[in-house]
Length: 414
Image (tube, rainbow, N blue to C red; front, side, top):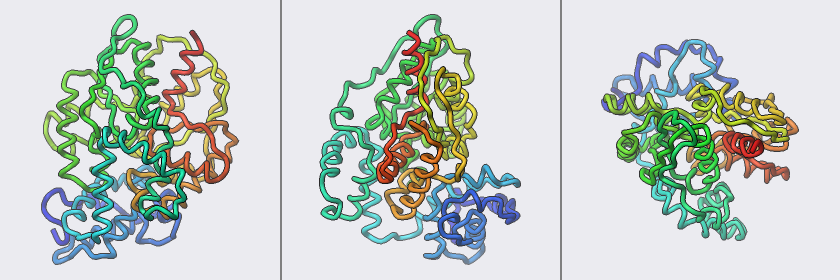
């Protein structure tokens, strides 16, 4: 397999699908930043082809350009030939982690991230330190820790340690189905209000909700970063936890994208069945007739398309339809670089802070240009990244998950 081993290497057939037309270039965030062909999807496909050649090795240059990819999948949406670049890069990353020795400091930092981010209880314990670090001049912190402190969601320690979410809630009225709700890791700890709005809305709409405390992370963070073995352990725990539900729901785009890919990752019947049940909260609610009336929420809201929602899952219309159904809410579209990633991308804004910051600043400018009073975003990573850059631009705005606005509308009608 050249520079790749025989365990799930990138597929030559997908490489051959690329005709190098260049339609991907305008949507690729790293090509937008640097204009370097090797930092475009078709350029990386050329590098993958080189890595597949007999006698090839994974060179330092190859790894640099693979690492620079955010995995935003905007190129997948843009490609007229249907090249599954997402399958290529997600198979390349574990190969890199298995065969390339990263510098010691980089290995240690990545290990620190994976020993904390996927663990909700450890994240809760760190919340006071993160809050305190925001009061310390960043130049007094280690450079990498300064990045973590800057990017971390701004939930207070009190918010993080609020009353735990219920594991089981009965539906209001005639039952419509049993929902398994993934609480996850970062979303559970720093964006628990999104889960509260999700549970309350589902219950009001007639769904029974099962929200187990275990598993923590669904494996998405590690999977997207190439830590395949650790991710698979979490994948199996997640599948086992939701064995007896009609649907598995998430309100985090990266989690939904990962869970919908479990079937391809494990290639077995339980994983395929699980993936077939996975829905984003907006996907479910847009597909059922609402039982609860909606009251007015007078607000001008710009909707941000999270990459793993719009590109990886093809979910664009559903959040918009839910928001447009709210009386008094004016939905605004981003017209400046709408397809360009905000720079969050899992752990990307932690391990590649400079390009992530440039992308975050561009996204903040694009959102502010709409004249919105608030932002709607369907994943915690985007919410934290956009919030930081709006603050840095001197124009902080409230950021809501669409389901929070739906629940506010339901409450307004009562």
